[in-house]
Length: 165
Image (tube, rainbow, N blue to C red; front, side, top):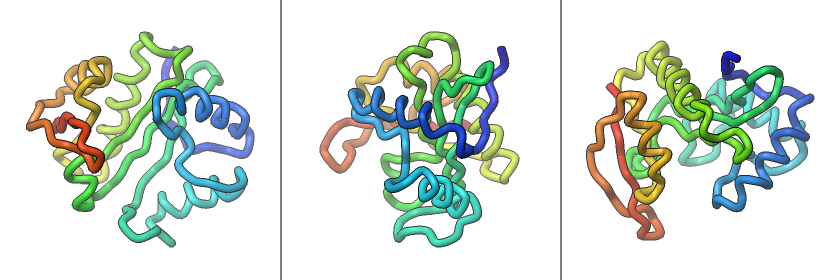
């Protein structure tokens, strides 16, 4: 079944909040904004247009990854880099729910995210992962990522920085 990246809708709240709870165990926030689901959808829409952004934030698309009508993961695509994103955040953040891993979904999410950035004029895409996250490193490398270096994040944990060009 093909994987599709799409914006969240009102009908996605239950699935997204369930994945959020599952991924908290990995110290990963699946939902990027606080508040009611309506607040989350409004924030997604504003971020996509680059409107009403909090300080330090850039225009970004928050997209759900769907396979056969089921939300399996998500991508956050940032169209510019702040100093923080350039150091340890990158252009793309992605996740796949635990029940959907090892099916190639992460690779397809990243591939489609890079294609969206390329279509928007971003020729070199920075993608980062924790130094000890072998699965994510393999995903990034499968999408053409070339390791530039490993740097500490703000908590001192090593982060691998890859460029996909």
